[in-house]
Image (cartoon, rainbow, N blue to C red; front, side, top):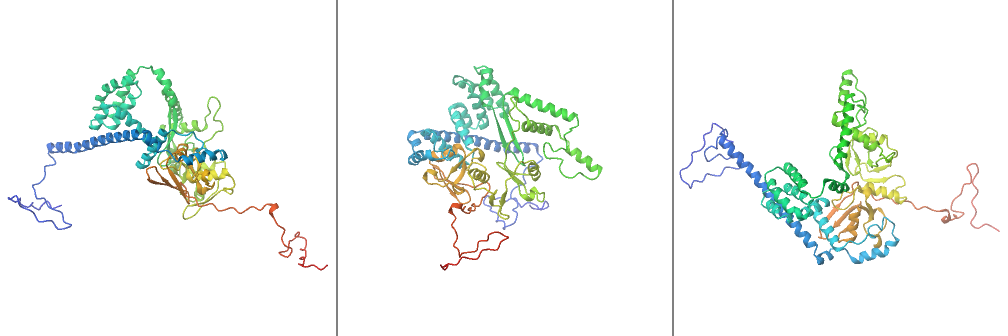
Length: 535
């Protein structure tokens, strides 16, 4: 920038004036009068309008692009439902027939996919376009399923789709509208859309969702008792990982159950808070209170203040205690504990390192949490890794002795379903032969990997193909001939072959001159027998 004391160059009178180009690295000087006064309120107001209008234009462009994406998703679904297209997305019929012929000789786990009832052509086509799109966009298949479903509803609502295509409403507004409208009878949907769409153009998403929900309640022909009974079938609980070694537990239930449960937790937490939090410092909720006590009185007071739990922390700890140790009214839950697999470096376990441990299906957790869990663990499985590469060398002493141990080894290696983008835990998935058992595939770790039930079926019944490379690396090829690679969660070295076991029946008596066979320690060995004894 030029110095404030430097006067600007004179403006030339002729229109053909062309200044000399500035040398490289220098800051060009202004060839026009100074800009507007930044303290001028009119200029500030104009600039505010201009800059926010640019953002609004991009917002409208995003809405228009999402409308085009919805239209393309509808076209993809209609194309896949063509009978001639759907029939050609089926897997190899010869491979399916071969699997059927050999299914009777398979174990229950090996036959899980090939013994399934066959999908119809339309179902195979649906699964194919969902998996192909999900892998291409790096989205979860459930997300793609939801987008496909929303696109069909959105495309069928002409007025809402046109408003989204014109950028008059956002996609969240359109989604909120169709979420409420789809629960109404078909005869009432058009009137509901006409009544609520104008509000989508003027209200924020939150307020619009509330307005649409209230209008839907007034217009629904069924009573809320009937609708609550039907919605009760959708109750569920799910877990969601969060950052920094934390997670969310979601419970979707009736309004009175969830509200009553929270009120009970809240009232218990407030009671403990009034009593001075007698459980503070015991490590009951977060592992706090571990380590040596501070030396001075001031340090002990400060540590005690830090250990006192706030109301939110009390609620979380009470929820934890009730869920982990509570018993249902019919007596279920007593003695039942959740099972997790945690990998802890031995130096971390001994308190000589701060290297984090690994929780199956989540990732790194703090060393303190790992040591607290290990202190109450009923048993351990030894895991030997290479000190530099981290590659797992062995798991337990009899890892490959039986099928149960091999399943544990594969579960530790994979952690999840090995289909691209799938995060279903390995513990709830099948152990699949990459090269089908019916085609001569072997039952060893280099030909086994976890696949959830849906992707197990997809592998056998569609045109998805997979090859397993050394180290458990899977190379997938989609029906669209796109390539995807999935690596194991924990790299595992090939297992060492076990030495052959020699049974007593197969032992041969050694030759007399081969070596001396000692009798007992207290006796001297017998002399060797000559090869040609005299007679």
